[in-house]
Length: 628
Image 1 (cartoon, rainbow, N blue to C red):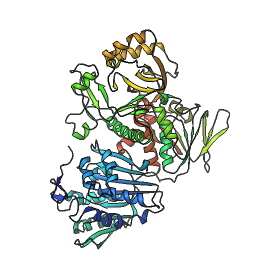
Image 2: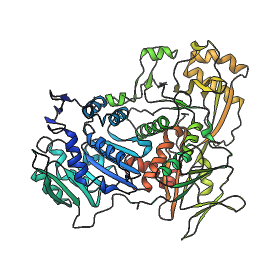
Image 3: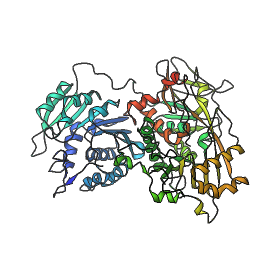
Image 4: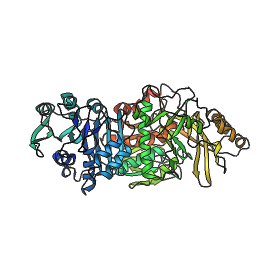
């Protein structure tokens, strides 16, 4: 459950766990501005910068983030991108976060936006997005030392906050200071309200030059300083951050559009090429699909990665598309044919924000026996992927060019990458190339990539007036999937699918696949299948087929293809049946690595997606996850 907070008679939040107040008895706003924001030379220090990164130890109720965000909004010289990374071992509930800010009316609109995203904060990394992607809050839930080891970035500013050293010594010990120092560059400024001798000595030992400064009365002193070790500090990342320049993205499906949008937000001029005449001409042209997190009893890497991806996709949907027409956060019922919920034992309340065992009412609405095993996914729904692709490509800084078949890449040592068509004509050139053309990526890479074509077919038809009893009021997945009510040009449609045929590259509708979709539906939702059986028999349902691209281990390939040998060639591909989940996350991960930013996932997830594993993947083949 969320951290227990008591509210004192004067309205001050108090932690029973640590026996300490969350803010000064004089009021947190003045302390936040004077001790942290101004104590680190902000906003003057970030003026004119492309991006700025702040690390805070102890997010608490988010006051320092809100104050910093407010200062960024008010500053005409603000950086294009503000990163705020905060660690927190015991996250507060969203309602308490808003309540703490309610005493500061000028912060309340920002606090309400923060509250809306503070859900499902399981241990690990959570990327929250504000200001159309220009303010990025990375919440690292867990012990500060542990969670910072899972990141690789260089902070420009550090806020050392948290309960007092006497109440919570683990936040102020030498290992914690070492973890903070690993995330600093020479010149990183640091500030805190405590001047305890153990804190001063510990910071000096790890390389900070520290001084006491006058505090807010009645407090006598505050702490300020800079990271300036007597040794050469190691870089937090193996990559040297690049400056925005020109980029060519090959492929205008979800992965390509997401990559282009993430780079354009950071100032890149992006040209998107695709062989089709319109965006989303391949598998991303699916009429509608299910967005749902993966669950597993051991909360596997795939499950954790899928939650990061679902959150990222929902953020873009809410920012770019009208809900109800192009997407719907309806929740999704997952029928579990193995008679389990699929959830880990002892699943906490933060996990239940995401998924929990389905209740009897939900099962009845789906026409299932109340003894059926099923999971209800709160943060899930349906999407029209082509509409998301179009919205992403409409972002400033992106140029779309259709009918462009890239067949070869070339780069001279001193020049940009050049993209050639089948007539050996240069159709584009840029400093960076991102391959996001699904199975076609392998044709552009020396030695190829371990990519497998996976064909799928969806059956769909228009809902008739008065047939509500045949359909559940929400999508259902498990053995195939059913979307019961998707708005289309000529009415409201149901959609069922999908097939999974490996190494088949054609997208022609196949009558045999229509029958296979009915058979899957008979297992998933027998009641609905009986109502639709006559339609399938007389050939009424329409069909759409597409070819997805998967890696042998079912995880995407995201990152630099050959960091040393072929600098400037990156990939965001192999989404398999989870393009709706992984594409937006892959675009943000790619852009974050290029710019040396905090990651939207932890290091273990980053390594699991590395394209360099491709040579190992060629040696083995794993089953493809049948989810559309």
